Image 1 (cartoon, protein in one colour):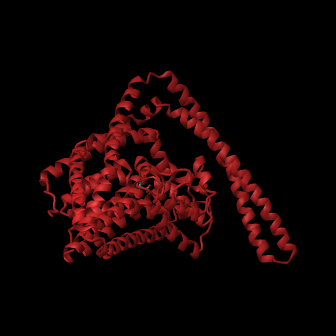
Image 2 (cartoon, helix red, strand yellow):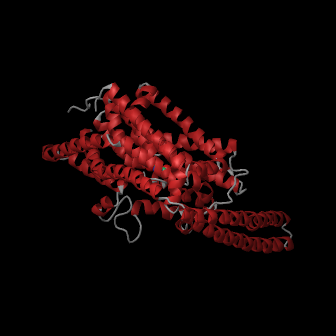
Image 3 (cartoon, rainbow, N blue to C red):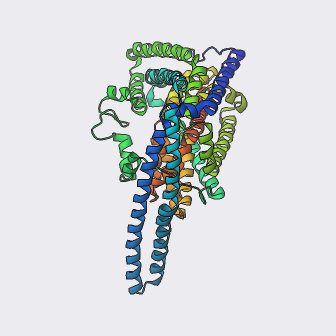
Length: 527
Ligand code: ASP
């Protein structure tokens, strides 16, 4: 079987890359320069006002909750003191004092600051009502259209791509009963790099301490995040496997595979294709017609992927401009960035160091030049940066990796699986964010708690689907495991969209490196 795809010319690759970069730069330019006007045209000020009102109500509820807990602790402290347990009484007293300070800050600092902001936003709502924003509205509709169509094109091809490439990858590895080693190495790679990323995140956030002094005045936690706080870590993990109650298309093992496909439940399809491909590979001659069928379908799907890639420059332009406009324009985002600057820097630094780690792993285990490989992956990395989704980027990653000379069988096996379970960037982010939240709430974490953060962050990243902001939702697993308030998520919400793009690119690069390593393993062992 001819595994290698024809490599396109270097100048063609460079040109494609350049056009994507231009698309991103134009998107940033439009979003930063005209994003605020587009935001006004899309009813942004009114949405912001509504959000501020909800935030005030939430802060008051949090303050009341803290006061209730304070009363309970004070009572316990009195009982401990009466029983002569002085140390315990002192510890409870200190904890009660911390809750008192929290309630005071919420009532006396946060609520008045948000009310002042409400007054300012009311003026902006009035101003928007009096301005003719027809042009901005039209521009936004058109720009959003470009981004949406591109995203839809990627998502529409993901399901056929995942299923056929997985089946082709598995069947070309030979009889499934002999492939335990390849599977083992792949999982070992996923786990080792994930663990390295989490360790890096924990180390950096502990050294830099971005959480001490972080400003969470305007943090708001959405209802669905608050509701998730009630579920336990075990429940959440079991849900990833079994799916949600009353939703037969969800989970790793859905009750209905077609429903799973209709919900773009990629993990379920991967597992199904893995088992299906494995079964096909054991059939010998009888399985060959079906295998050829899936190979032909996979080739056709990859042809469509190459067509979709032509739309990348305009698609990324639309996605980037819309995102900046939705977050209030360049100025508004700059304000948020300043508020969370240290957290942003810590995560970005961690991701940058992990990129270097992956390059070293690539050079050592795949014997490839990291810079050349990075260059070959650039289109996939920029697509990840713009789409915010490993799954949506998968078609582009597949194409880039195969263009870089990685065999179809390695790519077909490692990439789809990696796009949903191998998320180094997400793992690093979850650990860093959890400790950041603890620091900003003034809650010290013991050594044992750090170990729990390590384990749950690794698991939460495995459980996160490759879609935008999935890591933010599974962060609840880490927070509840170490008894941190889910409300902390509100603190990092405002800049999550940018950090999500960064971590998604690292997730994608991690998968691409894995594919190159497994490819070398396969060719060295003549498998
Ligand atoms: N957006 C990420 C991805 O698709 C997941 C996350 O960290 O939110 O890889």
